[in-house]
Length: 94
Length: 329
Ligand SMILES: [Fe+2]
Ligand SMILES: [Fe+2]
Image (cartoon, rainbow over all chains, first blue to last red):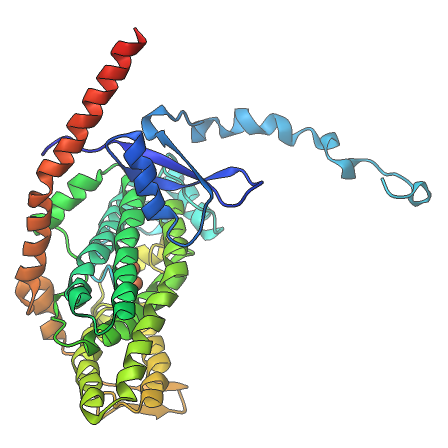
């Protein structure tokens, strides 16, 4: 088998003013071709105004087993949410 | 369906499950999505690779019967529409190969398994497309049956598969409607055109019913797949839904479904209909359909003829990267 084209992750900005969002991945020999392929694979119906491609190998992901230590600290901090505070109605909108 | 005969691992009773397997099953029961790096039973992973791979292969091989008519479409507009439809199917294949790749196989590995005859694709694509009306029948019936199967799969438990299905479903409605529009044009045309439409329906009706896979009583691999939410409905449930949806559409066209025993059953609230010839189905799956050799041959030829191009682009990319690295020194 000849050498496989590397994998790229594709991020697309759907509309002006929005963040780029991950939409999927594809194979391409280089970044330029990855953008061309992403245009054909992920934006056939005006789904985007801008494309980012990143080599999949360059992405570092948090591991599912670290979910607890990573995210539980924020779970415990309920006072970060505005609903934690009882503000009397007389005060008005806040 | 697009994955008609997916061999699944044997069903495990709860008493036989490890605590990890029980926790996994409970996540699925709660409707949680399983994501690529998370722990999963090996059987779940293997079954998904088979199913998603088969589904992807069906999308890609499925381009061939319709590709057959691109150069012979009756008008420039029809040609552009068909081209867009066939291009969508390439996209569907790519979304699905990407989903499969998150499970630790590569796309090229899956391709090679297909080319070696070690992985299947849907039996429907082993039938020939003899007339322009077949482009109508395929869009209407084949994509229609695909939609029936893919809509519930949007809720499948494996995140990347579910997301691929959502993307695909958004595009399928166009496929079915353009096919039905072809049928409407022909059915309302000259007597010869109407005959052509009827002939296409006659040839595609039973193969379309076969797309849902064998009857539930012969479908041995369903239970585990359903527990894992890799399969959402049984084959017979989906087939019944498809028939009930399609019969009035045929009536609207003024065409006759080629089944003398087809009739509305008030009691069950659905149609009674004849089963397809299952021996034909198993024969086609085994490689003996009218076009199996052509289809696989065309895939292998495209793969081999494209090798110099894939390798050339890779060599160019490597050289350019080396040049950039040197310039940066
Ligand atoms: Fe498709
Ligand atoms: Fe389709």
